[in-house]
Image (cartoon, rainbow, N blue to C red; front, side):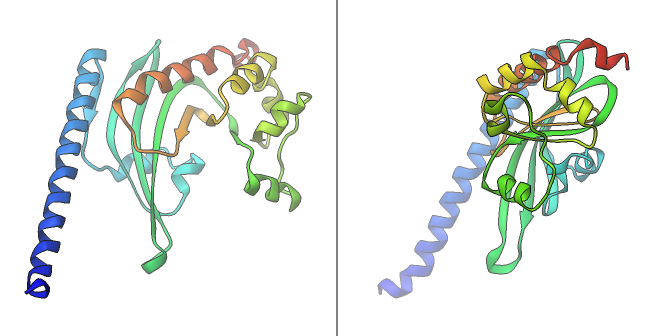
Length: 218
């Protein structure tokens, strides 16, 4: 008797899980929509591969396959064009397939710059250094131990990571940042939530304030 009911119970559980997931998705859409309306932004919930191609020069948007953006928000933050979206990509295949979710928030700062990446130092980045991959070191040993900084233009990296910037990033450990062209992007390994938008955009604005004025004039 129990064996005959098992497929029905499994189908029922799957249906309940799908219903709860859909209700959670509806709630997220409503929260994003409310945030966008409050701040004069535009919100699009549908999946979009064009957004991934548009910002494909960012390292994180080159990872894995089946890359797609969703929950896209566009507007202005402290006088800068700004965007945020959720990124989904897949690594591996078959039984080894894994789905990854990232939050991307970015501002356009008006001046194109060389590529620069700043990410928390970890086992993989230290292993890369041992193999000869370039990681720029700074006078601050604490900063160099906390972050892996990479750029083909070391002078620009030193200019960007000035004392004020290093102090700020040390106070906000875990920051993953990319700068290329005129796009300053902040990335976090999680699904996007409406509550993330203000802190991440504020974080970007604070970083922008600490970029020295003279690099915009070079």
